[in-house]
Image 1 (cartoon, rainbow, N blue to C red):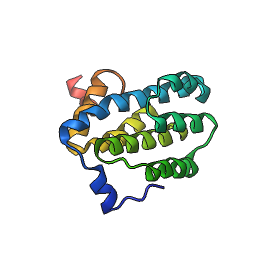
Image 2 (cartoon, rainbow, N blue to C red; image 1 turned 135 degrees about the vertical axis):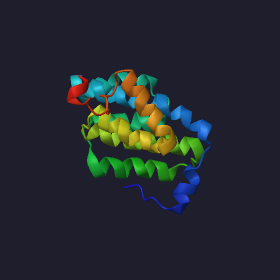
Image 3 (tube, rainbow, N blue to C red; image 1 turned 30 degrees about the vertical axis):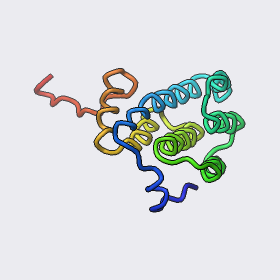
Length: 150
């Protein structure tokens, strides 16, 4: 399990404009989740050749092998500890780990998006979630209109 502490928080620090790079990664992880739900985990094999990040490729293989939950998170966290990432590369790696665990646990893509958007921080997560709703990727979280307005 990733041990969140002050040292990790310091290493995760990056500029706000860099966090924009997380949105495409979150969308990609959601695509993996939709494919796995529709076609099974073996469908993830198609993504392996284009997985540029070795952590993502290793994690996808572990998910395809059926590893899930705490064991998967422990292995992926160990990869993080063995590397010397910081700033945006570490933040992206944490998103990958969280996304792969959500994928292995068969989280709904909408739940995955909400978990991963939190890595953007509160100020940037809401616009991303609204964008995903507008694109039809997420169900709308807007409350239904009152009966008299319909």
